[in-house]
Length: 204
Ligand code: GRF
Image (tube, rainbow, N blue to C red; front, side, top):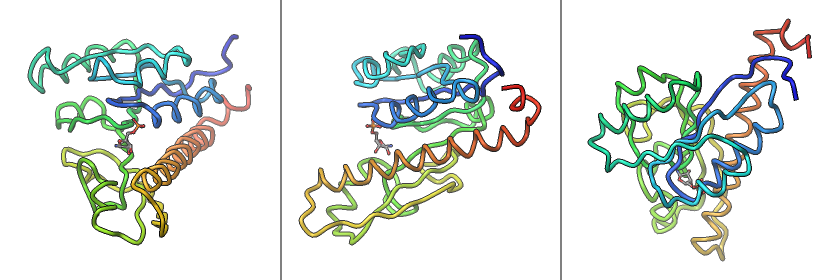
């Protein structure tokens, strides 16, 4: 189908099962004139996200760290993204800390974290929160800086830990919050862009 306008181009970075990546891809597929996921970057050759995202026809770049050190790895990622004119990078369970050099190339990077930051920064946050006996937890969408989950917070939402929750129940409830935060952010990006480019939108 011919396009009415040029969409904003974004990349998803993921390392794992890819439920957040799929949530983002599914949402963006509904607005092809507004936003396009132009690339998936995955650093784990056996990650579930690679198979999971195939149905969205997103070019997938599997770039594992064993082709060099962090600097070399990030340069390979930057090189792979070059043809895609990426404006935004959406981290969705990407298990690497991005360097200042990478963030100078791509300053608009967003991450979803499964806790109410600044509580439980870093890996394995839901399990650590659960084991600490928290009465509620949450998810946080934030901009990415060079630290570990330290960037400016965009949005947060709480959820309760229920009396009979297993760790799996607790994680599943948190994931639903993560998906909603990302969708709300994407919707806001689309709305903001429409407001900034009314002529383009009017030609739809
Ligand atoms: C999510 O909980 C995300 O917040 C965290 O890693 C997990 C990835 O899960 N950073 P999935 O691969 O999106 O299912």
